Image (cartoon, rainbow, N blue to C red):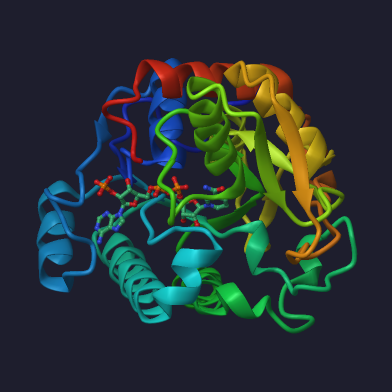
Amino acid sequence: MDSGCPPIVNKNASILIAGARGLAGSALVRRLRKLGYENLLTPTSADLDLRRQAAVEKYFDEKRPDCVILAAARVGGIHANNTRPADFIADNLVIQNNVIDASYRSGTKKFLFLGSSCIYPRLAEQPMRESALLTGELEPTNQWYAIAKIAGLKMCQAYRRQYGFDAISVMPTNLYGPFDNFSELDSHVLPALIRRFHEAAQKNAAEVVLWGTGTPRREFLHADDFADAACLLLEKYSAEEPVNIGCGTDVSINELAALVAAATGFRGRIVNDTSKPDGAPRKLLDVSRLTALGWRPNIPLAEGIASTAEWYRANYASARR
Ligand SMILES: NC(=O)c1ccc[n+]([C@@H]2O[C@H](COP(=O)([O-])OP(=O)(O)OC[C@H]3O[C@@H](n4cnc5c(N)ncnc54)[C@H](OP(=O)(O)O)[C@@H]3O)[C@@H](O)[C@H]2O)c1
C-alpha cells in the first residue's frame, strides 16, 4: 500500500530485522525490499544469539542500526508452550530485554516490537480491542509466552516515556505463509493442517480427523499482508498504544479445513472428534485502529492458503517440518 506520506524511516536507513528467516521476519524483508529499503541487516540466530547480552551489545555497537524490528522470538503452538514453559518465558524475556535496551543505547531511531493476539485475556470481549490487554486472566496454556510478550510491550512503553525512545508495538493475529513452521509438535493450527492434509492427500487417506466440533472461529492473515501493515505503521505510527494487525474477519475451523483440503488436493472425509476440547469459541481482533489509517488486507484466505500449500509442496525438503 502506498501511504503517500514522507516516511519516518528514511529509505537509506539501516534496518535490522531480527528473526529474518522466520515467517513474519521473512515477509518483512520481502516487503521492505519492495518499498525500496536496501540497507537491511538480517543476522540468523547462528550469527547472533539474541539471548547473549554481550554479543548483542557488541553487534549493536558495531552496526548501530537506524531502525530495528524484533521478529525473533521463541514461538510455537499449544504443545510447545505447554511442555517447555521455561524456554518460552526465559528466552522471550531475555531476547527482548537485550534487543530493546541495546537498540536504545546504540541510537536506534525507530523500534518495532511484535506482540500477539494470543496475549489478550482468554475471555476478552470479541472482537478484541487493544484496550482489552491486562483486563482478565490469560489462557493458561500459553501464559508463559504471554507474560514475556506483555513485559516486552511494557518495556517499549517505559523506554518511550522515560527516554523518548520511538518504540511501537503491534499485535498480529494468527499469521501464515511461506517459511512458516510446519513441524508436527511446534506448529500453529494452519501450518499443522496444511502438513496433515498434504500427507493425507499423498497417501490417498480416506479421512482426516479434526479435534473438537470444528465450530470455533479464528482469524488468519497472510504474512505478506501483515508485513504490509507493519511497514505502514513503521513509517507512520508513533505512540505507546499497541495496534492490532488482522483482517477483521474469521472462519470456523471446519471452513478452514475445507479450504486446506481443496488447496492440498485431499478428497477424503473430514471428521470431527467431538470428544476433544474446542478452546475459545471465537478469537477475532478489532482492527479499527489500523483501518482508520487506510489499511486493508490484499490476500483472500483461499488464495493465501493455496499459495502457502504450493510453497510447502515446492519446498518440502527444506521447510521446517
Ligand atoms: N506466527 C504467528 O501466527 C504470529 C502471530 C502473532 C505474533 N507473532 C509474532 O511474530 C514474531 C515472529 O514469529 P514467527 O511466527 O515469524 O516465528 P518463526 O517463524 O518461528 O521465526 C522466529 C525467528 O526467531 C529467531 N530466533 C529465535 N530464537 C532466537 C535467538 N535466540 N537468537 C536469534 N534469533 C532467534 C529465529 O531465527 P533463526 O531462523 O535464524 O534461527 C526465527 O527466524 C514473534 O514475536 C511472534 O510472537 C507470530
